[in-house]
Image (cartoon, rainbow, N blue to C red; front, side, top):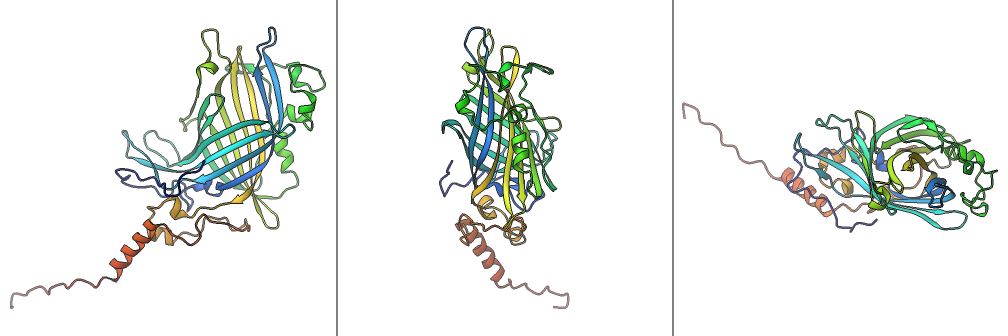
Length: 375
């Protein structure tokens, strides 16, 4: 998703008190600052699909995947106008994700979207958050909101399960023969298409992520936890589905009822150290009385590192603030960085600098000496 080079958000009228750093990180993008650039890697995907064959309501699709995400920073503060409280602003990145089957090179998924940082708000009373807004070509849009935290060391990646359950009753799970790879069935991806997929991966898709970092020394991890149904105090989020997916009085074809995901941005020890992005996402598809997990996981590394300069993300940032900020690059990464426009400030930056220089160099105005009573 490419924006024109000269596109810059310009709130009209301006947001009265622009929040230049929504997170306590010296970058407008906060914990998202290191995402800019192209990422590529491998992963695993599984989905219980609805099936129209009489007497068989499901088909289990399994894929080894090739996964890529291209993030690009949005220039300018994104305004949100307030009625219950003063206006706020966000900062964000566009992204385009593409996923293909690694065994048969078939396209599986494209996803254009936006990641953004949101400052803390008073009404509603919410902490600072991150939000992902995405459009899925099969007929679903999502808005998933949540939190960002950072800690030293590796992530704690939990196990997960593909077992369907009765809608709104996660404890009432069902076991079906399709999930046992040793059981022949016409209602699972054929053997030629699932080469390299093990029973362990089917039982616990997150085992693919756990295996990818086994033996690595991960120095630090930023965790982005988002959901279309987040828990308090975060209350934003939701999904929307086309009429086909939502179905009719007879029930849905396959409605995307909920999406939750965790993204781990990791600094991995190496020569040099490098950035790694892992994620685990679950989409709950509701049909025929059950919630059916659709789980996608992947481990990616940066192919093209792009760290946009702060003045490009926030052209209205005061020069005094900008001059006090170090580059938003964790010093332990150690890899070469390519900026979008190295050492070339925007014209607005130049004009502001020139104006401030003119004011600074202007000779002081003559101040008349106050008269005394004797004069």
